[in-house]
Amino acid sequence: MSPDDRFVPGGAALSARTAAVWSVLYGELGRRPGAELSIVDVGGGTGGFAVPLAQLGHVVTVVDPSPDALATLDRRAQTADVADRIRAIQGDTDTLLDLVAPDSADLVLCHSLLEVVDDPERTLRRVAAVLRAGGCLSVLVANRAAAVLARALGGHFAEAQRALADPEGRWGDGDGSTRRFDTGRILAMLDGVGLSVEQLHGVRVVADLVPGAVADGAGESLVDVELALAAVSPYRDIATQLHVLARKP
Image 1 (tube, rainbow, N blue to C red):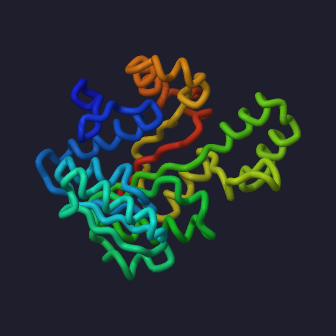
Image 2: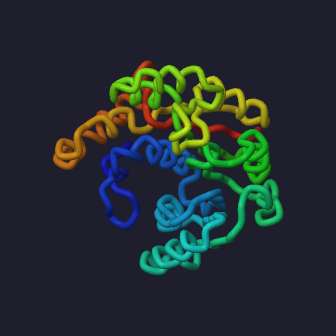
């Protein structure tokens, strides 16, 4: 990542919590410099990725079931002067292929979505169908290993063991997450829908472990360590989230 990439469009400093994801996305966008890409953000909500991508000159379609989130997206797009590059559609993955044409997108984002849908495999198949040949899917999912360690470090040892053994990686009835993923499971799912995995990174390897007061004063140093650890096992494997970039042949 170059020094210029330490900022997202609009001048905001790159966050350690999203640095690894943006590093991968910048790399993918850089494969076609100057091109206006067609991007679909499924479950993109308020536009945390859509607006910066539109500011980079791309056309972004956001599909999300929440009218409130899409209203916030519209306000953010207007403020950033990219409303003409963003199309907001209220809908969910069940109707995705009725809302977005198959084989139409150069890049699809599927961030923090597979954890909450009824059928992650079916959802992933529909999301992959939106990609045109050669296009890429950016997938971000919650990591089981991080939940196991978090419960154990908090003294909740029985819950840590349950998260380790549970098929969906949940630590108990009070767990607010529907499911979490292991590296093997998410990679197998992507292979099952015909996508070729090119990159795997951990996201928030240490950003969620550093006390807030320390993180607030760390600046680029925390971004540096996140980027250094993101692709390196075993650090990658205990990150809060796993990020995968996979290509459609």
